[in-house]
Image (tube, rainbow, N blue to C red; front, side, top):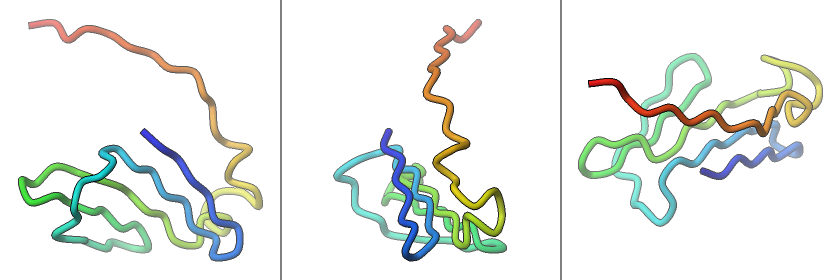
Length: 72
């Protein structure tokens, strides 16, 4: 996963799958979800991030990772 913030365009991009072609994008209220050919979410982009969260969205990033195994 890769998280990038572009302060010049006030755009936050969360990429889940690298090197995957985007074949469809759906925008809902300033949030764009990019899909691959097989329907997986490739990335999520948030437009006007600073207006929706805080002036510096990178301050919100908590790099802790929690992994739990799924219970069947």
